[in-house]
Image (tube, rainbow, N blue to C red; front, side, top):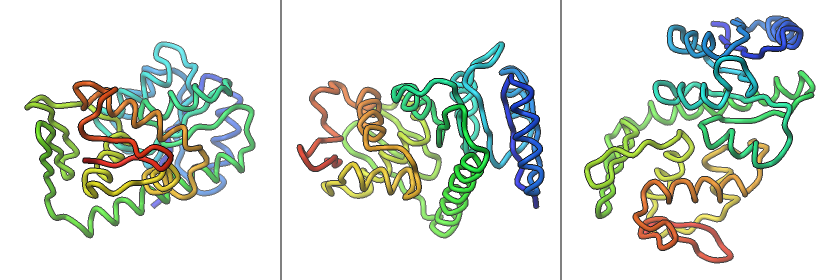
Amino acid sequence: MATKVLLVDDEKLIVKGIKFSLEQDGMDVVACHDGEEALELARTQSFDLIVLDIMLPKMDGLEICQAVREFSQVPIIMLSAKSEDMDKIMGLEYGADDYLTKPFNILELKARMKAVLRRGTRKKKETASTPVKKVFQARELRVDTNSRRVMMEGKEVNLTAKEFDLLELLIENPDKVYSREELLSTVWGYDYPGDVRTVDVHVRRLREKIEMTPSEPKYIHTKWGVGYYFK
């Protein structure tokens, strides 16, 4: 079955060129040019991957990404004309799997798409092969890895996909110290093009959501000069 891609960008010439190139590779591409239509398509159709520009009419890409993450874990690659590192990190905090700055080479986009799809396929296989229900309880924190739900003092905490993956790895291996490089490789994948600052930002955001006092964490601790661990 052909890989089905949702391509969202308000620059119609860019969409036309990318769509043609992806279809030459045998992909099924659905294209649209504004945020509201993109979100409706994501809700009503099943896609293997979404390529999403940040600057869009009606709804921007970050809003769409955040909304999609409420009902789907479909891989998302974000596109933007902005090249600042913080913009990249912000895009990933909203639940994106990768980020590409314009202008880009179509071959680079295809390589990123293959890497993201590969990681998604690998994760599905791992999940299918290990259907054992896992629930972890640490003081007020409860993590259900099957339903991917996190509860703090009985109230559900909304995490992005990567925040949950990071917490799941740490809580399954208490007191094991992971370096930033190990976390980047394990959670984001060995072929992820980002750097270790992505890990630091996600840990900070995770602490803000599950720690009563993020500056004095009870759960996710820092081993200075080494990395992070769950206690």
